[in-house]
Image 1 (cartoon, helix red, strand yellow):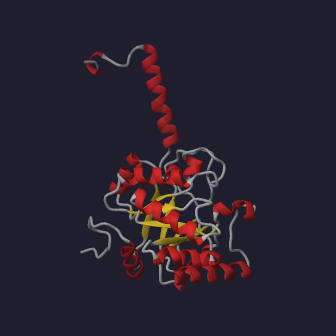
Image 2 (tube, helix red, strand yellow):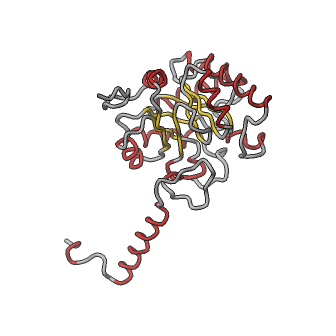
Image 3 (cartoon, helix red, strand yellow):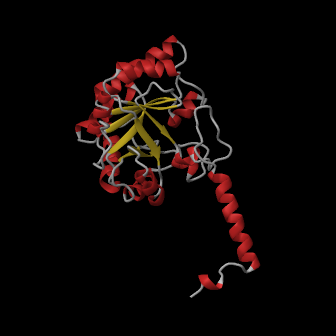
Length: 273
């Protein structure tokens, strides 16, 4: 008999994450930004669903994650929440909703939880935002951290390249991870860092790590759903495994529809009332 924590249909919680880390069970996480996709992702057995600020890119068409607003994130998250029965719903706090002011950060997190039905929020940054995380956690709101490549800081980082390279950068990332754990994060995303460093951090922490471009040593993995389903043709980083080619599938289906409409073949007699 399997002893997997997530074998049954009970709702996944932050406590489930802790149990999965303890049991050595990997955590599967994926993004979603709408009700229909959320239902499919949930029914596929996903442990967690992230409404990421990557919606700025894949939903809104922006070149960075910076433009998306708190109101937009809450709207998308509320749509996703209605499609979930089992998976843990985590929502990104967007740029400008928490930086520099702990009171603003707490108010933003409360809005996300109350208005979207989320189970947790995710915040980018290290030791410098530990106080903010602690304040949010003290209000009873679970927080997932995010280290490594933090897209909201792209103008400061100057590159979407691998982070944490070199002894000093690796040590800083480890200290940040420990600080986030101490502040109360229930899990930490590690994005685009060397696999050896991600494994080391994962072993050093009591809370689970979720990797994206951080190798197989993390306690779980997350990808953007449009990317792993092959909907975005021009995006193919090394860490991305495409499980489908929906771009071609959808294009073929849409072209067939156009052709059938133009020829008068659709709708047929059997498809009319």
